[in-house]
Length: 147
Image 1 (cartoon, helix red, strand yellow):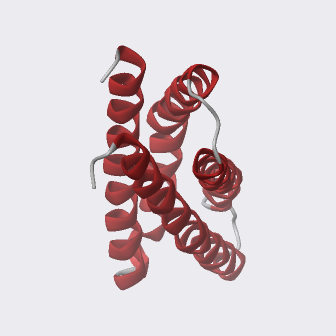
Image 2 (tube, rainbow, N blue to C red):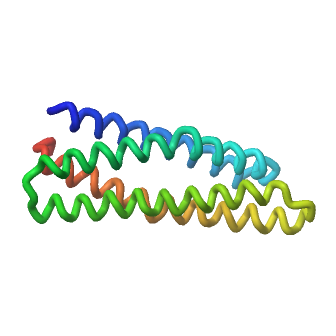
């Protein structure tokens, strides 16, 4: 395994760990709605200070690997799945930032509705992006001969 492969796998592992931590906090807020404002702000901090740099590392290392790898159909499908997962995550970052702004709403009903709507979008992003990322990882493992 070359340096770009190792860098890509490290970045993917960091991204997976962060996403799982985000899911745990989101589930906790869904079970205890009083935590929703805190989780909205915490998730915003995760995204701005941790997830964006990790996504940049995933994309940069992935592009460097793509440029050095002979193309085949499996690689093409892997790249499509990986880019879909990254794209959904970028959209989710905007949803997370919008939801965090809702914490400042003066009207309690408007704040609650905005937080609930934002949380539904965050879970939608996970439900769409996680299977695509998993598929990309499996295809990468197939190409590398891991299984």
